[in-house]
Length: 272
Length: 132
Image (cartoon, rainbow over all chains, first blue to last red; front, top):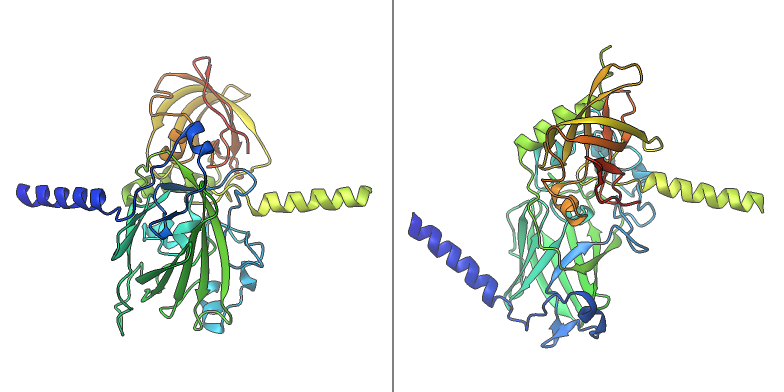
């Protein structure tokens, strides 16, 4: 057992050490970073290395609650271009964000059950991400709930992929942009913070590129004809950071304790 | 001109409401974000854990009645990035803290999300704060 763990740790270490098939770009700090020219390419492909923090502050710190560009802050989430199937499903949601947000008995699968947020919803949370680029697979590591994905660079999708929380992802580089194509999702996750559903026919395109040395844009296109009458896209900006990724797990025991000790108290009038 | 100013204020106001401080894993529907009160008392417990840091404070209200306050902050990693730590306060410390109270009148408040940290003074020392 010990040997197995040792082998696993060694393998993970080796993967991290050698996975920079790309010349690694260390996340520069302080004044040195400011004097460097933007260096988004490395070996002919975009260099995504470093730790990226979603920009919730400053002029570009827009917090999106939906991917619908006509309603980014979810003032009218019921007006998204949903099919009757999706509209019916949406009627039952009790989201924790947006104009319809409630603290009372939310059925957000992440908040209620610690379900994986899935993509693309995970980009709406304020936690860091990082990329490990290898020639055959690009790994994306998410600080929130410590989940990761593998994006395969050397194959097509399986003809009939199993459904999963993160789907089956294949990728390619188009100039300065890393393009990810994902299918094979289950339909258990929400697309966004307001409970918009998706089906198992969801086809997700992510286009990731460095706007400059310190900024990364992740543009998401939702293509789900079973749930939406048209495709739609929105983007989020991340900034390069030196803050190491920390532990933000969704532990059910902690979530339950928080729900009882804090959230529930805001829902029941105090006894006199 | 007045009308224009009103429109601008209205637009800014609605943006502020709609883009309201997302917490890490939930919104702020349970709190009155337009109201800020100050709680002064003694820390009975400082819970440094996910999904949100929480401090429990024993504080007397205006009529001298002891209340047991529960005040939440952002997640531990976000508080660390703002300069806090698990040692920022401990049981028995004297605390004066601003908070947005719950809408239902319960002694529950929110003093930080990822975008702001309200003023907190522990044993006479101010902890790092941040405006929206």
